[in-house]
Length: 367
Image (cartoon, rainbow, N blue to C red; front, side, top):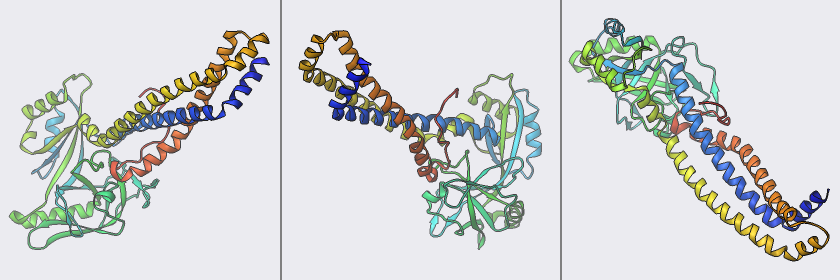
């Protein structure tokens, strides 16, 4: 009872100092909670989505073959390979209004059963139900296209398929989440179209012959067998040596490389915020040390009176420390709670740059 009375009196008489310490600890906890949530949630989410959508240990983008089956069978026969997933696509430049792409886009045939992409609401604030199919003439684009090209729903994207006016125009029907190429830091971009449009474009390419500007291709998601301990570069070398992949491949990316590209912006943001947290933490420690020292100096007279009333030096020191411990714990709890809406706000603000709607929960548990 005595300790509680003295503690209340201390908190009341030093409310300004206590409030300052509380705000500093709250800011440190809020910033640290947000940076940890963004960094850890990003890494977990990208890797889980790549697994859910079947990105292989190594994915090869190939072209120049009318049917992927013979090459897939050839690769699958290797002891080092467990399985191969296939996505049909078309490589093509694209234009949005007066803006031309710096790199080729990939028109991917939408297969909701095997590759169930997530789709956004038009506002990009949340997910919407995935369509059962895509209508002819419509296209879904990555969310990062909104920041890269200021594209909106019902805008038009034109793909030059062949010379002399052989273009294919699509109307943007919405945005989807692409964990492979969705970040604005990745030049190549995937677009979802229906199979009917894919076949029409493929026919235009064949009819154009040497005048064709686009070309058919595939994404081959190659999964390494569990018994193989080859590194990504060694696995790629084996594929090139033992199969005809090298004759058709445009480029290859390991799972780790694509994950690194997708997490570039999140890692930069986390690094900058972590540096801010470190500076703020040092400032908080300096302020806290100064506040405790000043408070003790101010309370010399009161402490003397309390000692004459029977209070020991140990009890008085304990009360001083306890008031700051309570303040720090309250600030930490409040900061961690506020980091939830802060992480949610950060996730929504970065959708058009990361291409992902990152989870906003606290990263509790094993990665």
